[in-house]
Length: 362
Image 1 (cartoon, rainbow, N blue to C red):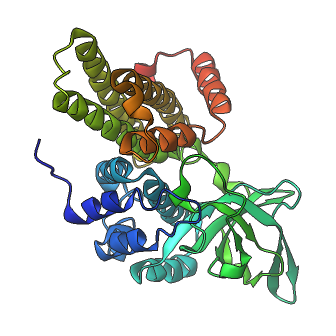
Image 2 (image 1 turned 60 degrees about the vertical axis):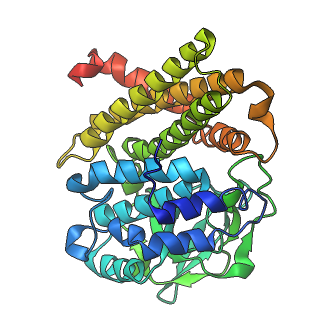
């Protein structure tokens, strides 16, 4: 099959094995995305972008971009999804001045991120001091350390979670030693220490509680599910091509696995297309988020099926350390754990029970 992957994505794919190491630096791949206009593409068209993830007209292209990145390196797709999410939050909730400054930074090549997980012993806080906001606390599982220069972070207040846009380019505050996961190594995740950082009140993004508003909180999970799907598509392609190479694709057991995987990835794609279009539509109602919750469930099921069938089909060849198949399985298995899938399943069930509707009627 002729490779239709653009050359810059082929370069990212070629780097993937080299980046499959703790403390690997994805800066070169981020630079490739910037040079091809992918970071700026997430901006609204009025800001020189293509509306990827920020406008209804860019929804399909955004979904496909995340799939394509997921096929070549799931960790890089994770970083790009965080950037896309950050732009969306700024479009939804930031005032005009903050949008202007942050969008200008994106046009200049800045990678944004969204860091929500607090270190339990040191949750993020802020207090007003002489006209400044002084931060305290530590974020954990912060992806893109030393690559993300501006991050949207959450801080708890009595009125609800408050979003803030904070500079995160101080390398001395980054600590990736706590990220020793088997997968997603190139995401360069870890702790970021915000203690003592002073920012302006102008860096507040929206009002307390905005972050959890639907349909864009749970509804936005279609983005990382699209990256999951891309990895599953890559795994299917590798499995099928290896079976053809070994002249085992005509075996009836392998044919069953090939068809099961093909159906699985297309099923997930169709669910995600619908979920994204529902959530990102102009004036989408809050309950549109249910489509993303259900699509996440389907995507996880499909991805786990592809992992299982690939390992069955290839046997020990699927477990060769450092091979493409083994790396994708590790990365995808870990990424599927994001975030609190049981809670998301429960929310989907509750929505279905409360509405009393079939999915097609939501």
